[in-house]
Image (cartoon, rainbow, N blue to C red):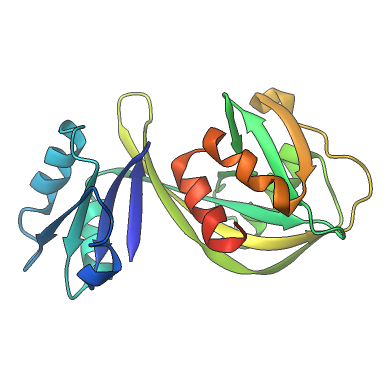
Length: 203
């Protein structure tokens, strides 16, 4: 299953309608071949009254590739980082709470991309990459081009006792450790894709 977030709207791709038919705003469209996918994507982008459109297919990976071809794809990575106390590392930027992440540089592995972004955005060290968590997808305006960001997430442990330091040059206003039981209070001020990821992991 894939979920592409357009702010709070979702364009989904899945093979089993039972996974999403209980969602109150979900509309299904059965895809029998790759023809017409660009038109479906364009219609969804233009019709903001449509909250969720799910493309049902026996080949979700192939349809996702076709959907991605409608956008300029941006590869990125980030971290779901916890310290010895089990707290989660969050950043605050552009009016939203978020997880540290950023674009992949040329020649960089996706794992190194994730580690580098956490180090740079939060000023922390002593990181250990533990496991792959998943991938989120969201669409944004890239200065005239519609961009689809694929953000690859990894769980990490941080053994740095120094407080995190926000990377203000990247407009990050805060970086702080948040106890897991306090995370629900932050969800309303998160991007929908990040809130969805956290709800699947800890909340």
